[in-house]
Each structure stands twice: as C-alpha cells, then as structure tokens.
Length: 412
Ligand code: SAH
Ligand code: SF4
Image 1 (tube, rainbow, N blue to C red):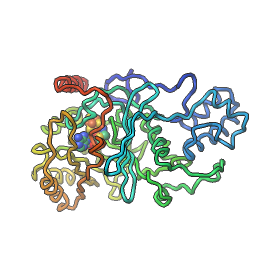
Image 2 (image 1 turned 180 degrees about the horizontal axis):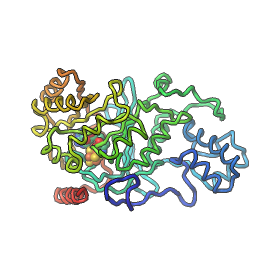
Image 3 (image 1 turned 90 degrees about the vertical axis):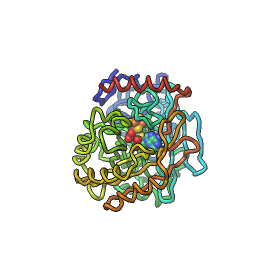
Image 4 (image 1 turned 180 degrees about the vertical axis):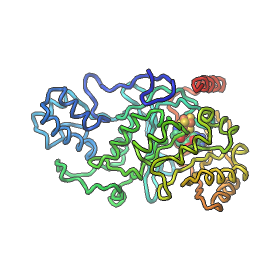
C-alpha cells in the first residue's frame, strides 16, 4: 500500500490497530475514542462523557487498566475491558549507557521492532522518538539508512513511546482523584514539567525513520502529545527533524507547528547528493527556500541545521564559510548543530578530528550564528544519533550497496 501522507511512490506494510479483537485506544483522537465507544454500543451522550474521562486517564494519568478508572461506573469497566485496551509497545531490551542515556528496543503488536532513546541532561530530558521501522532513504552515514523501510509506525505506536517513557521514568501524577478538575494549569509553556522535577521535558522526532514520509501518523501523535488535557508538552519543546522532504515542510509548520531541524550535512550538490541522496530529488536551494518559508520560524524560534562532521568530506573551512553564506543569503533565522559522526559497524566514514570540528564551529560562531558541537551520548550502547537499527541480522557490504541501489531507484 501507499504510505499515508506520503508523496513518493514507496510501498510499505499495513499498520495493525487491533490486538486480538480488542481496539487499542492509544493514538486515536478524542473524536476517534468517542466514535469507537459509540460503535461498540454506547449512546452519543455517554460516549462523549466516557471518551473525555478515558482520554484524561490515558494521557494525564498514564493508566492502562479500565479497572483503575475510578470515575467510570464500576459496572461499565468490565464492558470496556472486553472491547478495548490501552496498549504499550513491548519492551524487548532496555539498556543504560555509562552517561545515563537509556535505549529501549521495542516491539509492536505485529513483532516489528524499533528503538527509542532518552537523553537526560542537567536542565532537561529529551526523548528521541522513532517514526518508522527502517527508512526509505539511505543517508550514507546513517545506520538506520542501511535498513529497508519495513513500515510506518502508527500514531498509537509513536505516542506509545512517550507513554512508555513516562512509565519507565515513573513520571505520571500520583493520587486517586479521577475528575478532570485535578489537571494542572496547563498553559502553552510546559515549564512546570521541570518545576515538578520531571525528567522528560522535550521530544525530538530524530529516532528511526523520516517523519515527513509518515506525515499523518506523526501529526496525529504530536497533536496528542501537545494536548493540554494530557501529556501537555509545548510545541516549543518538540523538534521534528527532516532530511529535506521539501513538499511536506510547509504543512509540517502549519499543521503541527513544532520546531524544525533540517539535516543539511553538506553545502554543495556533489557532496550532498552523495551523503544525503534525497538531495538528488530536492536540492539545496529548494530546501533552503522551504526553510525560509517555514511557518513560525523567527529569531526566537530558529531552524536548526544539523551537520554531521565527516572527515575530509564536508568539514573544511571553505565548507563552513559556504554554510554561513547560504544561511545569510536565504536570511534564515538559524542555528547550526554540529554532530560528530557516530560510527557503526560497516560505516565508510570517519569522524572529523576534535580540532577540525572546533575550527568549523568557530568560523560559524564568528559570523554571528550559533554552532554548538553536540556531545555524543550513549555511544557505548549504540544509542547516539544515526546508530539506531533494529534488525537482528547485519547485512554484508554487498547487501548494503544493493539496498542503497534499490532505494536510489525508488527515488527516481
Ligand atoms: N530522518 C530524520 C531524523 C532522524 S536522524 C533526519 O534524517 O533528519 C537524526 C539526525 O542524526 C539527523 O540529522 C541525521 O542525519 C543524523 N545522523 C544520522 N546518522 C548519523 C551518524 N552516524 N552520526 C551522527 N549523526 C547522524
Ligand atoms: Fe533516514 Fe534520517 Fe537516517 Fe537519512 S539520516 S537514512 S532520513 S533516518
């Protein structure tokens, strides 16, 4: 089938919604929960009330059993349990890095596996969420890019990662109150997360997959994550990273409205064509023009350009100066995030030396543009940027080249 919200002709498997004959309510809109309850036999008024209560229990309280939903009539709880579930992905493995970064390998109801990473910092905690199992693209420096796209994750599977992280971090509000009256004062700023001492404060769509090739499900999931009567994360604390799916960028800004990160990685056609092959379809000029038009980008909310530092490939002083020139030419409210290349078995690149990365960063800073160097996190458990991959089998070099060729052919 065609990927929903997808603009390129890449086929993928289907997304299962039901477990057994019970419907998983995670990932449905409020309206979707209401409709599911009505379809199961509740009258319109009851369905509306119950959907509101259930939503609150799922997303504000983290409850997975209808029996624990104490403001729902006792007699109704078994009726719900027979027909619905509040699902979670299955945890296959959970690892903790020496630097505190955590990585989970998760399995969906159909057994497909994907990874999720939590990166704790002094002032924030960032959850790195996957949008696809595998990826249709094959950026040459990315481990996920060596996988085929197996399928898109559903909205439920995407938001399920956030719910699971909250479970694992023990961060659901305590207490027994059941009514919506006990919601914190949820304004647009989720500052109270840190004030509450919560660890999970930020979300980045930077796990496995290209989020803009799974637009509808990513949008559905992020709408839920941002909903005030629930997880209530501010759009300012969410960042979506794209390798440059130009036709979907304006919609991402208008319909989702989160911060944008763009995986630029090179400043001329020859190199970007090689390392981010999507560039052959949507070139640098088109991409930067789409960034300039990105709704909501301004000096207070800058676009982040991600730039992986590859030795002797994209890391010269001239590259840094060209990057500055391009940002200025397109008048972009931008910052640059320099990512030291994270190695993985079979990778054909090396990371630039620390001195080279520093020199590159300095040139950009000197032009007045912020260009911090990202500290690699979780490398020891293969949890750093670009190291995620879920298939147990490791393809050979020849197999990798064949996958790359297939993907290139699909790009046209
Ligand atoms: N598919 C999206 C988001 C996931 S990747 C995208 O490409 O933007 C998150 C970031 O990690 C991207 O900027 C990606 O280019 C970068 N990355 C991939 N492989 C890497 C590696 N081996 N080392 C460092 N960064 C890498
Ligand atoms: Fe896919 Fe992003 Fe990896 Fe490129 S960098 S292969 S778009 S996950």
